[in-house]
Image (cartoon, rainbow, N blue to C red; front, side, top):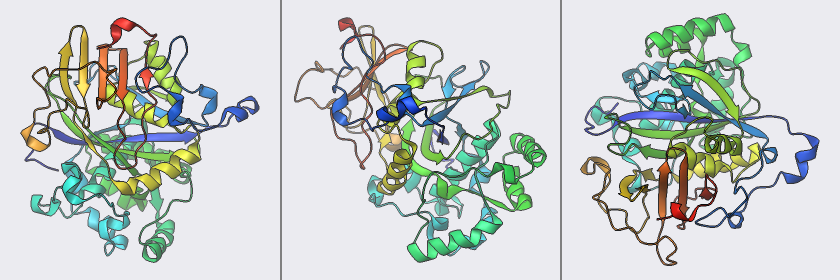
Length: 408
């Protein structure tokens, strides 16, 4: 972990998608949404810009945080949390010793140039005293936190190690053939419950658990998806530099809240999540709105899996929102927007702006990459730039009925 950071604390989160069976009446609607399906600035009047829930053959996992949480209480979030020192522990070298001769423990290499990589991944961890690369440690963190918060453990058994290693040696890295089959039933539920309690008490017990159960955290099933940083002054004094990963499962696994940080577990299609958010049934933060809107482009689990596993080798962009207020609106500028400040990366930026001049978003030649918030449940994604690193453009439009007063 990087103890030299001044503004942010490092974290990792997991977007977990799992398949469900579609009804026969929905088969005709199971087609990916094209970029032309939504206007760059508005979702149209009198109709939802989102694909119907019947288009999806998978759900995404959200966990509702406790009202007592010190960060975003009552919010629905992807599983994840702060990096712990044990995620970078040299003891993982023994757990992963089968893969010790493989770069990054057998993870596929990323083609993104090192000087454009988010510092989260680009930081030399050896200089910080850890032999565990960031790409590995943040995956360990995401898997550990998922296990702690909802009991879902994604692992590779000892019996599978040899086949996985052969795949890495022959092709350079494992190429996932399809959504992962969850094998939790292969482990004794009593053992899992015992270890979950122990890991919740002390995250370093995750290492001991893997040793005793003879399993490896399935870091190879997690694909790099994004990197979000908390802007200043939005959610209190806590700010996080968070790695986002995605994993697709064949079917929904058993999940149970820990009744501490997490009070409920919810599986819903991406469109249902956004529609329930719009209906104020629960609250999700803007990064979740943005990423779930991306997923709405791919209603089929196999398409989502194939896209995310291929795209992950491209790398990802660091997204640090720069905040500005105008009238009743709250605008978060993102990289690529015409008015996004040029010096906002690393420790040099606090993540706020001194109320930059915001032009009319209807201006055709303006580069827009922003999130406009009227109230916690009323936001608009405004984007007319091409996403970097071959990523998906979110399904765009308003998460509320059209109102001309809501525009900048």
